Image (cartoon, rainbow, N blue to C red; front, side, top):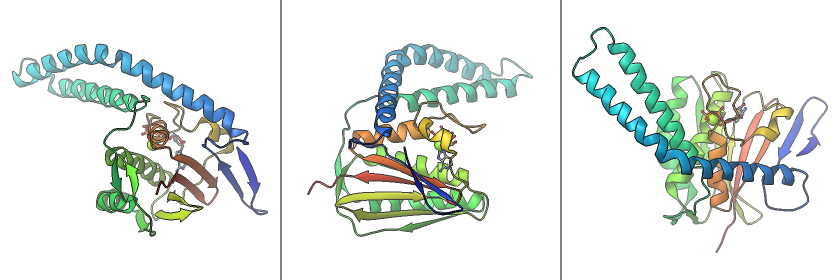
Length: 249
Ligand SMILES: Nc1ncnc2c1ncn2[C@@H]1O[C@H](COP(=O)(O)OP(=O)(O)OP(=O)(O)O)[C@@H](O)[C@H]1O
Ligand SMILES: [Mg+2]
């Protein structure tokens, strides 16, 4: 972690998640990648074993519901089904941490993926009185797995929106910097406490009551599969996540 003194009132924290040498953060970054890989491998190994009995239980619960076999228990049956679905979606997320090779790489322009996601993102933001602005730069094609990159964007956007109160504006930008293609997700939240920065990307690390703590772990994992790096700048004015892709002409 590199800490820059920005001015007398604020601070700017820069956290590197790169394969470049020379930063103290590299050691932590390596640990994080190892942790994420381990979580992914373990999850992949046990997912089927857990999913099969869950599917059976879900089917039986659904049958009880359909047959109206438990009068007076409809709500509780419904809750059990919802909880099973939640457990299932956590397993799906953890499986995304597996260090599998990216398949389905296509020549895509990041801007097109962002344009496709924008209407949904904007209406989600509007529900809580926030705005999303997209400032596309002129950028070349990249080799991307569209589904994975859309997931990464949604995760960063959701965190940005969750960090802001009503009236906040979330900015999405794409630009070229030093021959790399960069996606920036900038919020106007309260920032991330210095002590928590090293925890970012650790599976199941969350400070939110309703959080699972998988959003960033999955995003770091997707970025790594695309040879991209994620850097965070945070301070009292807000947080910006930079996803930096290498351009291969
Ligand atoms: N833009 C942000 N501003 C402030 N804090 C953030 C931001 N992004 C991430 N964080 C912090 O990092 C933690 C981990 O984020 P992550 O997305 O991995 O999990 P989560 O948002 O808590 O849960 P979920 O699994 O639903 O995404 C958050 O709980 C929050 O404390
Ligand atoms: Mg999140």
